[in-house]
Image 1: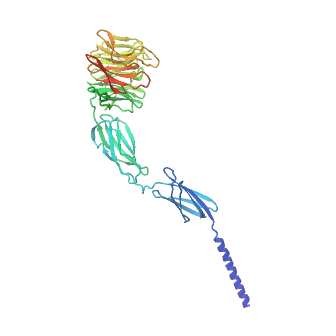
Image 2 (image 1 turned 120 degrees about the vertical axis):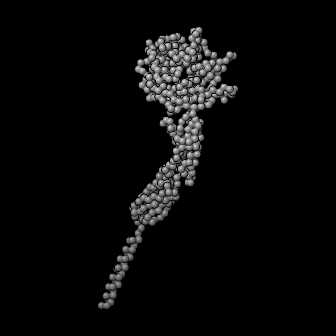
Image 3 (image 1 turned 135 degrees about the horizontal axis):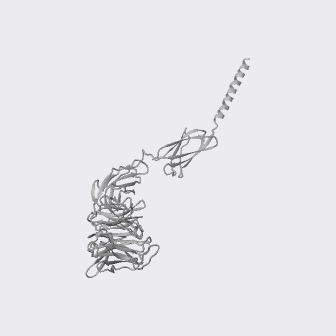
Length: 513
């Protein structure tokens, strides 16, 4: 009986051990999957190499290849937090589930660590010094800034005019020096510099200011093309040297902004003001300013300057500088330089509806105006003097000649009249001029002569006017082909001969007072 009981006990123990042995074999089977992934840079989406990839719960640790890819093979089935870390970047985590026999994937975009990459130092403005005055129109800007991470710094210099709404933004990469040209005279400018290392927020300097010099007293104003706009410049005449390099573009300064279209400058010594035309909203209006270009003021508002071709429009000062005479198609108006006194009724209207394109005044004959009229194509020209007081025509210089006429001027006493005429006599739909020459009419003898300005075949002499002493003529010479580059010449007459010199390159509409 005792023997049978022991046998049963042994059997039970053996059975239990067998069951336990079977359980241990089942738990020892490893069920795995695979994890793949990619790591990119957040701002550029470039692949990042050598990024350390680890998991929690822990599995194996791998590093990304040159394409930013990684693979963890035979990773146990479970839910994981996958970590990606690389020096200089913020550590990133992504969740993923690994399932039996499957490949799971995860993607990282690492951001540059702002805690490890520091901002550039705040730019310190060096030149021009704050409050500096009488600077020229070409200014060198210098500043100082450092970056401890050796990042490439992009600087942006913002230059703002205190006299108008002009703002310039100049980008400078990896340098702390830049020169800006064509600043305006008599302007207060404000400037500051921002630094951007591509990793942190921009750092901006304090604001500094400087002033450009006042008008240098130049005697000539003219127009040059800058970009798509006409821009007014001033310069002086220096013919003391035989070297043409010393006489061309002498003491050149920009007067009006190149952000607007300004042309036909005319200085008045009595008013100490400069008048000019400017395009405003598709119309042409009269403006005045200081001789430096500062303190601009729009004179005409309700009635614009209009007629045949914008570049053929002209106007004139009254002798005392108190008003301006201008035309709107077939009507002649006057207006005070403060914008008042412009009545609805014109002071002169053409009888045949022809356009009044050009006007000139005689300094010592305040009631005499020289007027040029033409048809809608620019031809059928009538050039005559007009008495404002008696409202009568005094003298007719030209009456419907064949060809184009322009560039009118009248001497101070009103006894000599200057104009240009296309000696080719051609009239065409494009108003192309082939051989324009300067002519002078003597009102006392009623005779006309061609001015000996040493003309060049294939070139036109236009936009002529008398010099202040009336012993010379300033004018523009330009080839008669399209897109030709003009130049401004000075003709000086002596008892022996005439001397013609180029004084400004690329200029039109010269005014020499």
